[in-house]
Length: 220
Image (cartoon, rainbow, N blue to C red; front, side):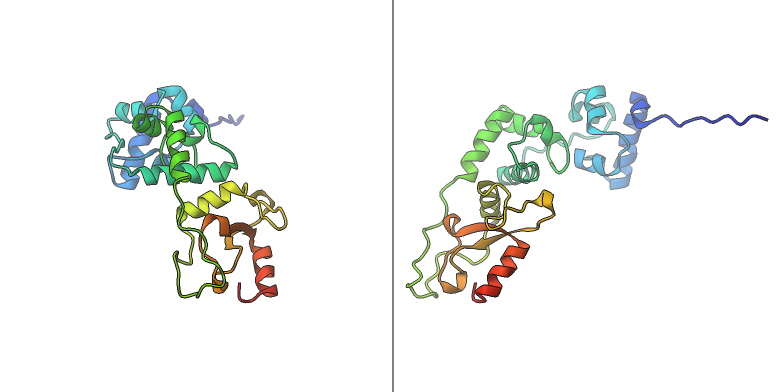
């Protein structure tokens, strides 16, 4: 007897109803009727591109699946901006609308457009936030080290700004994440020598160069 081989349909071959049922399945997995696109990327069966092609927007798909909207008008602007910085740093360039609908983004582009009026206006607001007045200037190294104006560890926003300013590239050797480098944000004038944690005194170094720097100057 001849054996008949049949392929299972690919995910893109699922019907709209099957995709909506898969969304409801993910809701059961996460234990909530209010699932995010991030949840669906983790547990769902189809890609963002397929969802957009079938339903236009995530919000439309949620409504069709009979789930609760995940639109949250109480998301702090800082969280939206931090997410935007994550995507910007991951890409190594300014993200476009569709980039926000893919990993590692936690919030859809429409969330930004709804909050700020358009995605472009969201980018404008992000730049204002990212370039807001930084902490006081560095204290001179001759000043007593105890007289600190900043804490030792850079803030999240400072790290993002320094990485963007330095182009996600080690200042010493030019290594980048796509080369396998782990990047650090380090003090130019060491904290132990009175250097402050301000943008002008921070730089991007890869782990190897950072370790080498401290081998030469253990007090850094």
